[in-house]
Length: 327
Figure 1 (tube, helix red, strand yellow):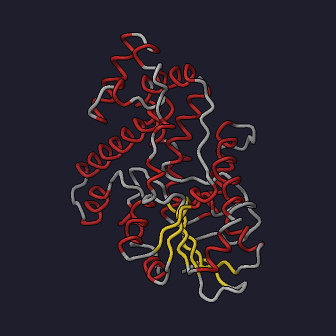
Figure 2 (cartoon, rainbow, N blue to C red; figure 1 turned 45 degrees about the vertical axis):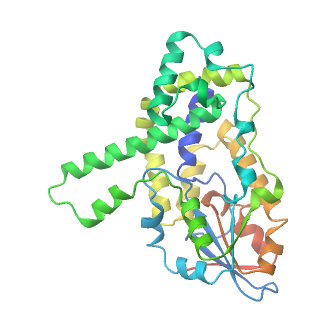
Figure 3 (spheres, one colour; figure 1 turned 30 degrees about the vertical axis):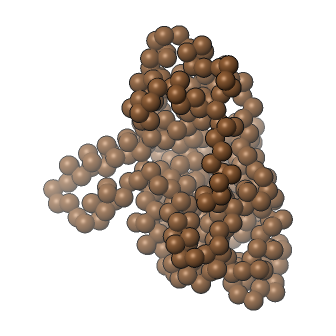
């Protein structure tokens, strides 16, 4: 079950938006970057988000980044990976199993009971009513459980402290299922900025090519070993290093840790990342220059899209823009 372990690790790593790439750019520290020059009348900004995770509070972390809200206020357009206000992005039909498929047909009674225990706990419904394909259902379940586990750990840490500070309480209270991307996009919308989804422009959809029977097999293996993998995730030195590197806005360290963690280019995670990161960057760059020439924009995408030879920082510089870390 090497594949499911890689998949599990990939899902949890995505929660903190890790970078799997290398770059020739010497200085890659900072999450917020100013884009200017090359004929732009006004600057735009590029920000590397964390898509979620129990230790990455949107508001708590964003408040600590100098000039971030100034950059957002000076923009007239918010450019994210997807426009959450676009009705087309709420079409769940592609995520659902075909009408003639069901978990009751695919699983034995014992496994079905385990699955339903999880879906009732996290979604207040049995699996036959949810009908999400196994790949997506497992991703949703492990995300919920990881956040739940994060709260448990944070609460345990609070109990061990003789003196609890306001900062300790802020971090505990801030653990939320709302991703940083969603938080920022809602804020931009409330300020009247126009919203653009890069994936909406290029028509990107994540691939779903794993056969249903294989997905079900991996789903049940994952559920039966979920707490074990999540415990390993929270205690893995590399994962901790990734998290701390993001907190300290150190793209160099994220890159270093990622390269050391998965040096094999044939690794399943690296293959998936190539599709999710590099290919999308190149397609996005067919449209980003036009977007930032029309309106000063605040571009907020997962931090792993920023550094690397085909990262957005490097791609923008190759196009002739000046891209500088905002301090």
